[in-house]
Length: 405
Image (cartoon, rainbow, N blue to C red; front, side, top):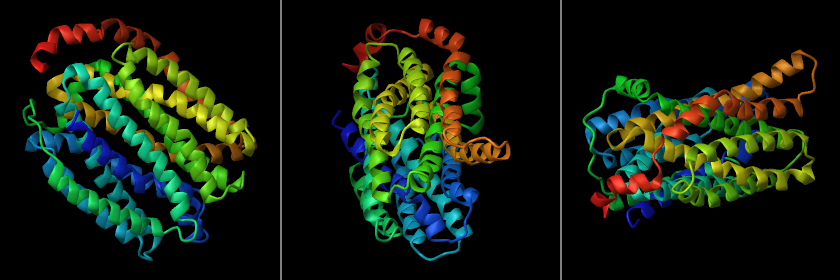
């Protein structure tokens, strides 16, 4: 685990400037560019996620072909830092959206390859806890970034770009010194390999669909829900950051234990139970008053931890040792697609409900929460199949334990 901890710390740090934007979404759109509408505000999040989508598709493949992870991670960090500094400048809104797109791409290169490097390093008998640790670091970074964003940007929202750019610059310098590549067992990959892998190992569709729906709802939360808190519940940026942290801190703190639990309990069962409870949480979020938001968000964080680590672990298990980067790239591709479409789901749902003359709130929350429950019901036959065919942790140890001792 000594080589995993620095990577987990790096993942934690790169998440801070990304999620610091969430409590400041209104200030960075309507506040900075008066007259922007619902679509403009949602596009500020979606453009970043679109860049993530493109690089989730290609980062793992490039790295497999190159045969190294570090050679892409470090340059991507420097690009990430430069883009944050550029966003501090008073550039026109279309240019800001372009920078957001590029920033999302640079960030995703680092995230995909950092998690893949962990999968390369971790022995099979400790893969659950290793990936769970990185998942926990990612979640804690998201939570901490939300709080810091509300604090740093309370006086001037654009200050977060200066702080974020400086932080990522330091991470880039440290990564160049600390990171070490691990042997890659796979041959150089081509773009069609990702789709061939899914065709050959079609059960990968299960964690892919789950992460798509899960991150679809997260995209909804960090855009529509953030704006709902600011405009309907009249919460200040610091209060929005606290609300997001109340969700994300238990989420992050329990992701590592969930990874450990995957070594004892089927990750399929954890994903299914967590998704149903998460759907209930989303519905309750739209029904609660401002005073009830914090306990509802805390409940959401508890059940969300049952979803992330199991989906990562299941992806790794189903892919096999030689297709880690390709499978993880597909996993992040599905998640990034969900992230990108989440804000569009929010603004599209709001527009449709207004056109139908229906109450926007809490209806939009009930609709989005239902998606999580419907996902479990629709995939139940596949869930049972994957659960039945998955090797137990004891079988993994018996098969591969000797070579990792």
